Image (cartoon, rainbow, N blue to C red; front, side):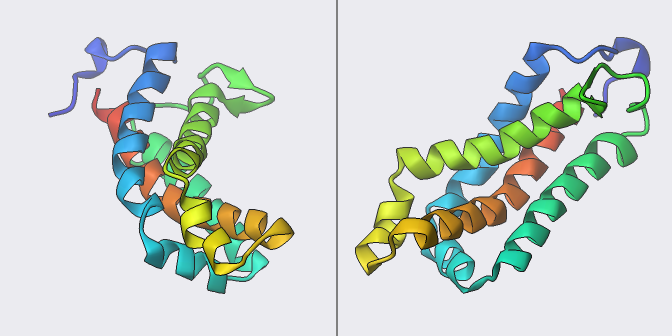
Length: 147
């Protein structure tokens, strides 16, 4: 059940980022440690990786400002002209996946042990992060909107 408009906090606060982080980490975990995600990322080209990152931003913006009609990006605090809530969401979506990938040593497990090193390692890791962030952003935006 959604909070009534009068009970929702109108301003973005650090607690909102914490809520996003909980949702982002919960949904990112299963994907960042799945070999299929890393295989998929290895098979993607750079354009597909960039489009996937763009999709994460599109999903996040739509979830924050289109699905939740009680929010107006025009009245929110901004960082470089971008709503702070959206900036936080992108940091959480990509950051939670990156933290989990490093914490669980996923690049070593799925790439280095197969002989992938150097620039290819970094690019493939970035693509895997983008794929996993598609799921992380859904969890982060949902947690932000529900709580």
